[in-house]
Length: 340
Ligand SMILES: Nc1nc(=O)c2c([nH]1)NC[C@@H]1CN(c3ccc(C(=O)N[C@@H](CCC(=O)O)C(=O)O)cc3)CN21
Ligand SMILES: CC(C)C(=O)C(=O)O
Ligand SMILES: [Mg+2]
Picture 1 (cartoon, helix red, strand yellow):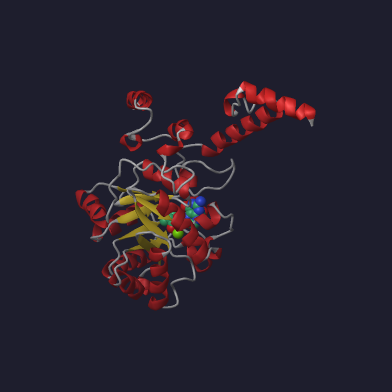
Picture 2 (cartoon, helix red, strand yellow):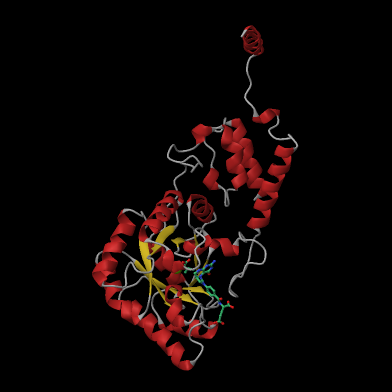
């Protein structure tokens, strides 16, 4: 990887950065992006943050996800709520990027997910869609936008496709949502179902509670899973159920289960990006199922503190961060100022 990076950097210099194979790198790093900041022509015009335009990467399709499932290869899913978080998830090779309504809590600071609106979701979906070159995109229908009738749900789903620019939608619920899932899939919109712990129903579940902890409750989750499969969903999130139950349910199905807090026997996994990357202050509660793979908060804190210190001590901006003016122009200007 290091070798690949340095070879690529060398070729960047040789060719005056005309055709940098950014996405030829397994994991193009952010630092690489920042190094190219002085070459604005490298980036497509539609984004100030710089989404590279070449070489094009193949978009993941439903068919690709199905063949991963058939091969028994785990499907990787990551949430994203804006352009940079989608960009990095896509660059890291996620199969699916989900614009989860968890963004209510992690990006908008709401106490739970019930407050977020369709319009809020659509703004975030569009920003994610712009950055997601390869991963298959899913938009999470927020509470209140699909429960009233299959017609209401289809209308909302169409808005997600048309205005959110995502490729599919997700909605929470089991048996009772089967007619709704059928209605949406029949309109040509792929549906990812979501059973087990359904956070939008936390008030009737008594909070964010593990589901399927008794034989009776586990049977309800299985029945929900079979019903949403029958209704035509292309897969389902299986949230917060005991690992053994999730394994058995997965084996009973012919569509993939995407587990979160459901153990290693699922067909894929999903985590909330800010949780797994550690982009939250120390001491914040995280669910038991989260593995923290990074410490983005600490890195961001360190960077901002360094900036603060360097501004206060006038170390920043240094010479290299300023624009030059020809000496004679400067002298002429100084004279003009004196005359003033
Ligand atoms: N940042 C974030 N990460 C998530 O995974 C997430 C959200 N937000 N918001 C929407 C839902 C809510 N989620 C949650 C939140 C809390 C627990 C939780 O407290 N679980 C307890 C188990 C309680 C029990 O034993 O029943 C735990 O200890 O992990 C679980 C899922 C998952 N989703
Ligand atoms: C955690 C995933 C499955 C989700 O629904 C969300 O992020 O909203
Ligand atoms: Mg959600």
